[in-house]
Length: 115
Image 1 (cartoon, rainbow, N blue to C red):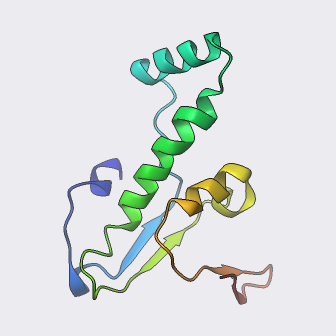
Image 2 (image 1 turned 45 degrees about the vertical axis):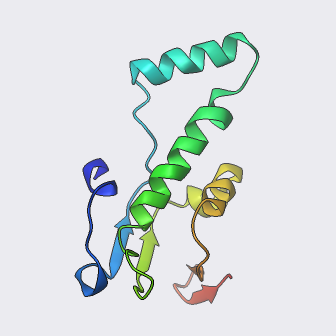
Image 3 (image 1 turned 90 degrees about the vertical axis):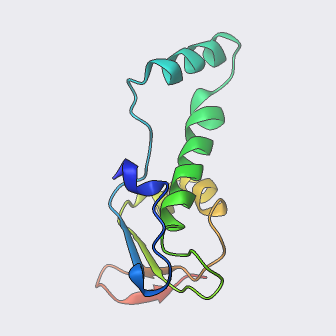
């Protein structure tokens, strides 16, 4: 899925829905990312807040943007990862997305428009 997040241009009706199964976190074993994280920890900073969340927000916005390529495009973006709406960093990830209507489902599967 990582390769579809960038460079794919499907305007108009070619892409009207994007399905995101999991938030696009970078692999934890990335040597460059780990070196940066070690440096931040060594100077008393939080690598998750300063590196991981911003990078994930950018990838998530790119993935969501696969469906919106022109000013007239309309699309649905479905994210099945509950961390997007149930964690503090999920709220930060949402802030990185363009404005849109958020629809959630309650325990019985009924739609609840959240904003």
